[in-house]
Length: 144
Image 1 (cartoon, rainbow, N blue to C red):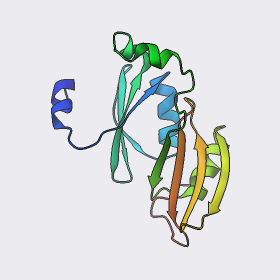
Image 2: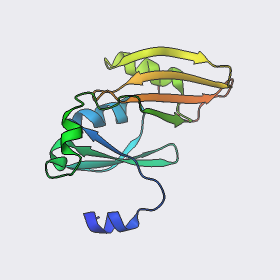
Image 3: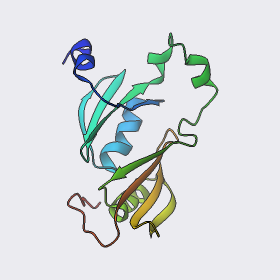
Image 4: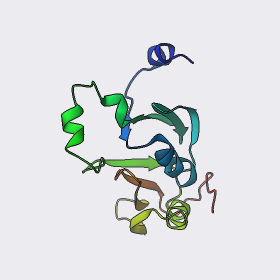
């Protein structure tokens, strides 16, 4: 799909993650989060999974962007942003993250608010929190 046609198809809230390298970002998304790449090139990628779709934009696409200076000030992109992926089995995601060398900052834990969750960091510093209701079994468990 042409970029302008894709842009015109969007509605509601979209999330654009600015990443150092598309291929490195897709490695985490595909192998740890088990989402599908809908489109990718050297500038951006669209991924889909768990009833959601989001976009990865390479740094160089922001060369002429008004937020370029702000972006350069943050080598780790995630900051305090927490990206929750509901329905992604936290146990399986944590196993995959460890197997592929990504940081697991909290192993899967049952929380008082009723979710089992794990905290994972991708290659750009984004904090991903796969979660499921405590006691549920994932339909999406694609273990390593």
